[in-house]
Length: 126
Image (cartoon, rainbow, N blue to C red; front, top):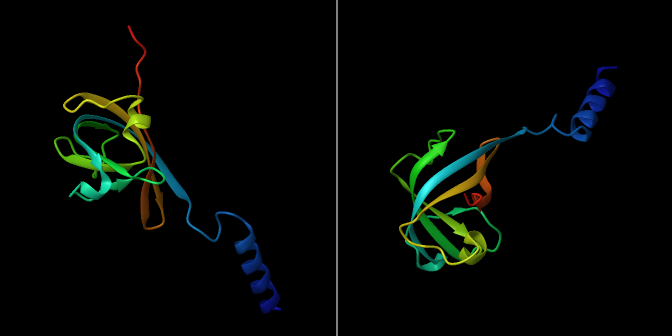
């Protein structure tokens, strides 16, 4: 009698999403940072955080602020992101030394953390 109940419980656990696997926790981050470097991914010495498909380029920013606070993006530290294209990301030519605002999602699933939906926040002209 116990065996059929155990088999049924295993089937239900596998069939119902979220029961058999840990849920993802998504955190929306807002970064403000000064652009330090733009270049080909192969030419950048620092390890890059993948945030885009088919990444060929990397940008390095000095973090001015991060909301909410995040251990990976501390104020004053630099972060390098692997991106597909600086022209697509910035909608034009990025300017070294200019401060930009970025949005980014941190996705935690079990023991794995990834980052996605990296974008420049464009403010409406005043």
